Length: 71
Image (tube, rainbow, N blue to C red; front, side, top):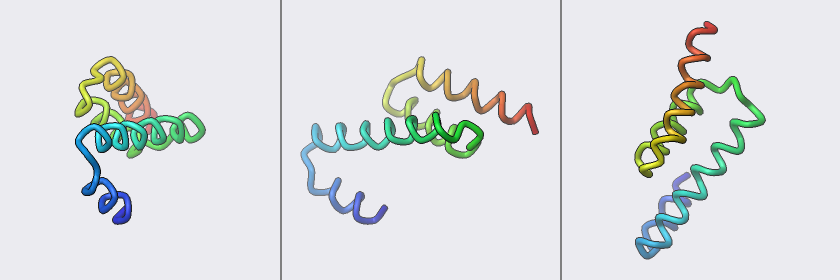
């Protein structure tokens, strides 16, 4: 949200990294209860890749492929 972006702008690099990671982890948790959210999985895969979490990104990308195949 705009408020989140504003808050992140005033954080130290370490605080910002922790904040971003917590947002990504919240998205991952949300997707566990809504596993058919294709766009959410795409966002999560990209976020994990940006954070350097390649194994987690690959898992999310596998979920994207599975959902795209189910269409």
